[in-house]
Amino acid sequence: MSDLEAPWTDEQVTQLNRFQHGGYFHPFTCGIRDTHPDNEGILIATPEGWHCPVQTCPYRQAWCHDFMADKAWNDGMETYWAGLFADISVNPDGTLFGRPESD
Ligand SMILES: [Zn+2]
Image (cartoon, rainbow, N blue to C red):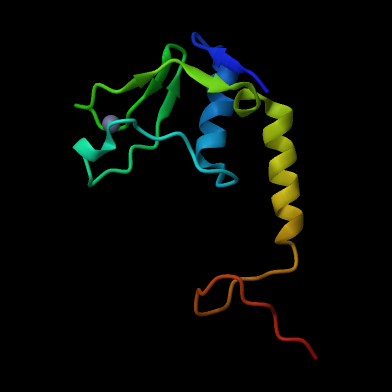
């Protein structure tokens, strides 16, 4: 595993933002989020690097792990997680991870 420095391509930006919201791993977050405790600061990828979602926050970061920007890696994680949860349903009352009634 190595790191990728910005600038990133549009495709890399797409994959990075997919990673951030995929839920497979903890996303990159703002390094000074204690300055805005009402927003967890899940970073947004742009071609120039990461930006904090808080408009007034100056935090920037210009590197990522290479796998985060890799479409095949993201595709693989999506498939893996879909397989793990394939036999789990959401209960009618909305609670998660309930298994269907079995006969
Ligand atoms: Zn921030």
